[in-house]
Amino acid sequence: MKILSRGDRISEGHYTVHSRFERVVNYNSNCKLLSFVSAAIGNGPVNIVIESKLRALPAEILILPDKFVFGIESIDISDIPVYDSKLKILHSEQTILKENLDALKQTLASHASEYSLAFLFDEQRKLNFATGFEKNLLETFENAIAQLRKGEIEPGIQKLSGLGQGLTPAGDDFIVGILLALNLTDAFSGNEKSRELQMRIKSMAQTKNLISQSSIVHAADGYFAEIVKIFAQSFCNKRFSENDALILQLLNVGESSGADMLSGFLFTFVSDKFHGLQVKI
Image (cartoon, rainbow, N blue to C red; front, side, top):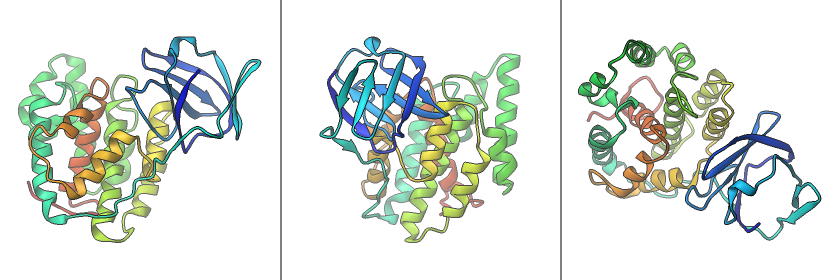
């Protein structure tokens, strides 16, 4: 097995397979996630990027400080590059924030998947929710968002947690987007004003979904997948255009996961109930 890189938030332990997909194999150890992924997925806090075929991975893996153990086989990992998942904003240009948020809003409206939470920024998208089940789901999302808009953070987050379908529910992805935005508002303001709120959200958003829980916990602590880090760092100092390649790349993550995360990100910046920057777009 050829390992290209490993995440910096991987915990030691005995892992058993959780789920298998074409480009990802997820493992679980006492509610800790570990993901073996292809290079197309790339780096993440708990990702091990490999060149080998994922289907050959065993059902159990032991992670030790200096090696991975597969049955009687072990791999020395001391020389394998470690991905630094901590989001660091070294430079920010607040003057371009409004332009970038506007570009993000326009791109969400035109390119987000039809059942994503991008309906928050384009009323016409609500028409996609046509069946009785879909309409009920839409109403629940709207109620949760309405609570956040009123400053009722705890019930709003708790209602969003685990809400939706798919490998990672839309509500969980939206929460990750909120946490990403709060990390950036601290960078723009030059302080950690929202740090306490991030910790509260992490506590409120407890979910039994292993993958969502891992993403939320790491996002609250400022750790993100490389694709998200690049987007966030660029967002702070590079003017985005409508249909910008970095936005479109995130929109292609999952069925609607990327769109739902970006919807939570945008919502946080335009809301005055979070401890960040309110920007009218």
